[in-house]
Every structure is written in structure tokens, then in C-alpha cells.
Length: 408
Image (cartoon, rainbow, N blue to C red; front, side, top):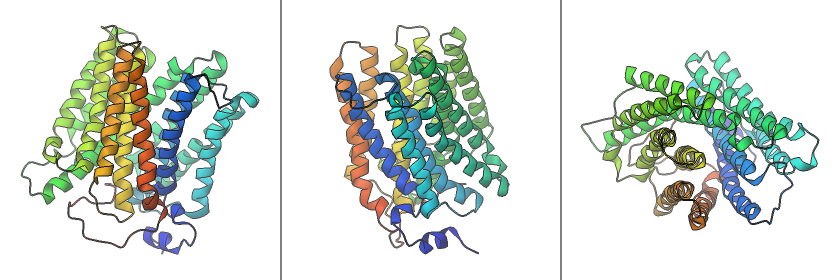
């Protein structure tokens, strides 16, 4: 019977198609950087696209449903075989999925030239195919504990459809329920999957350092935090301006902070591959606190949403891509100075973007945020290009003791 390793060895085509994380992490990061450059051009009046979306709506869509879709695909296509014991999608079927994602980016970019609903249909083809893959693996492998991931992927896909529909209806999707639902689904995915990988990888690293205090194992506390988070997000999606949503978000922020503290992240400050996971996850409670504050203080909705959009989504996905690419490509699991610089640039981008929303008129903060963002994701594409496009390196002993496999 074929195994994951055998399927990868048997592939004789380009190495980039030997595993899902390779093309999607590379193209996704390149698109994240390029999309930011295009957005700055759009704001300056030099619009190179023929999209039916306004600049803000296009920018939000391509981060939340374009870039994030690539990272979700890269992660799931790599992690699901580990979870279920199934064979990975490799070779030309993988190339077909990549082509669907690229077609979605192109269709949205020229949507003003297409008949109504065509861009929407092309853009949705990729997440529907990805959800179908995940559903097949869960059902055939009877891996029912990952049904919540499938449910959230489905919600995220429906949110994308709602975003397109609102764009066709009133042209203001960046402020609608579709964006909030998509962002809520993304935050829940980070809560569920981050709740697996952050304490697991931290435990592995601390154990290798012979630490005596390790991250708390998953238990009733985590289940309670997940439920409180889901309730707060549902309230925010439905009634974003209600004081009840602000109150529930504050409670969820406290719960998520307590959960993060229990993972002992402050003990891993000497290894950037580990501490960045804690910082990235830390933007989840910070986002809840920002939304709670906006319910009582004059803070713009754009500023609060970017704590999640750029912080939780941007930094957490960058952290996962940098680490997973090294592990699955057979490279040493330690952050080089170049990788650490990517993390610092991303943190700078998030901070500058939040301040730009909280301090209107300070355009230099927007320029700083955009520049740091392009440096982080463009830098990832450059630094990781040889890692993602060359065959897996021979196995070697990993001194930092982090298991390169995604935890089950």
C-alpha cells in the first residue's frame, strides 16, 4: 500500500507539486505582497485592475478570501494526511487546485469586464473543491473530530459568497456581514487549530530544553474558551454595534488571554519559531479587546478589524508557513535572522495599521504598515523559494526538538 512518503517519492514532476504546502505557501505569500502593492497603486489613482470592487473592498477580499484561502489549502492539504492517514494530493491534481485558486484571483481582478456572478462562480470554485476534499477525507477516514474544521471552512466559503453578493447589491461589502462572517470563521480556525499546534510545538521545544513547566494539556478550560469565543463572534457578526457584542467580546478576550498564558510562551523567547506562534495567537484576544473597546470608545471599526485581519490572520499564517515549510522540507527547525526579520516586520505592520485607524490623517502610518507587510510576505517568498521548490532535504537531527509533523 502506498504511503505519504511513497507518494511523494514516486512523483517525478516539479518538486513544488510534491506536497500541498509548497505551491500554496509560495503563491499565497507572493500574492499577499503583490496585492498590497496593487492596493497602494489603486489608492494613489493608478488603478491597474478592472475589478468591480472598490479599492477597500478588493483589498479586504484578497486578504481574507484570496491570500488566506491559499494558506488554508496549503495547511489542510499537508495536515489532513497526518490526521487521517490518507494519501496527500500531489502532482497534477494539486496543480489543478492551484489553477482554481489562481483563476479566482484573476476573475476578481477583472470582474468589471465579466457578466454578473461569473467572477463569483469562478472565485468560489476553489473553496468548494477544497471543502469537498476535506469532507471526503473526514468521511472515508471516519475522522469525526475534525468536522468543526470542515464546518468553519464551509462558513468561510459562504461568507465569500455573501461578500460577492453584497458587492453586486450595494457595492459596500467591506463593511458588511460577509466580511464579518469570514473573519469570524478565520478567528475560530485559529482558535481550534492554533489550540493544537501552539501548545504542542511549545511543549516539544520546552521538553528538549528540559523545562519543568510545560503547556497545560487540552481540557475543559479550552473547551469553555472555544464556546465563549464562538458565542462572542456570533454576536459580533449579527449585531456588531450592540453593547452586548462588546461585552461578550471583552469576556472572550479575557478567556483567550487566560488560555494563552497557560501555554508558557514566555519560556520560549530564545526561539523565534516558537515565540512567534504565541505572539500571533495573542492577536486573537487583542482583537476581542479592540472590538469591545470600540463599543464604548471612539475607535474606528477598520482599526479594530485589522487587529484580527493583519495581526491574527497575517502573523499567525506567516508563523505557520515559516515553520511548516522548514519541517516538511526536511530543514532544521530554527529561525534564521532573515526569518526573524520577517516576523518583526509583520508585527510592525500590524501596529502601524492599528495606529493609522486610531489616528486619522497620519498617512505615513499607512505607508509604514504597507511597506512592512510587503517586506514580510515578499521576503517570505524570496527566502523560502529554494525551500519550497527543491526536493525534500535528507533527514538530519533537529537540535531544537520540535516535531516537524503537524500534531493530530
